[in-house]
Length: 109
Length: 114
Image (tube, rainbow over the protein chains, first blue to last red):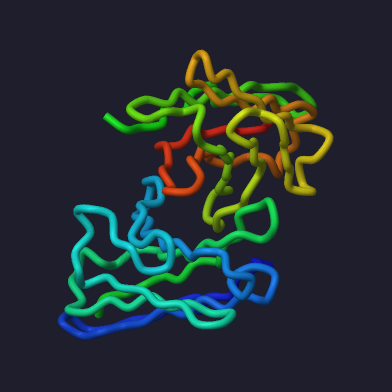
């Protein structure tokens, strides 16, 4: 049972927009801790898509954006492409530990 | 180049020990808290341990408390994870992760099997 809650799967057609939600509580996201988002392709390490709620590292396309409100956060992907098919994880903090969502599998139809 | 490189994984029998290392490069290692995070085959990400920038405080997941020890040598820019009394359920890819502006290593696989 993950501390943060994500939908197990989402899907969309090429060119469409999809969102992935991440629900926490008052002890993690709601306590003001930042939220990071990761993309993980099979057999590879997680790649940082978004850090500190809504900041994209250099090299990450602006098709990826994120927001945070209260005890929840969300990742939006616009102009969906086949190479976006992957697992996506949200991550925040709860006192002295990292907490993660269970992951969302994005399928590009 | 800013990077983290893990090593030390392998196959080990239940009850035995293993030490993982994580070499940091391209940034001031001693300025950052560091984590270990693991991922069992086909599963999600699980936080394992945290050590503050100067090693003054350490925190562990309940699943590894009393068996695993996180440490660091800032003079060598290296993070460690000493894993004792290993169990089958510890089988996973272990990642070292820089805190704050997060940075992940490529991971090292630990397989606990007889």
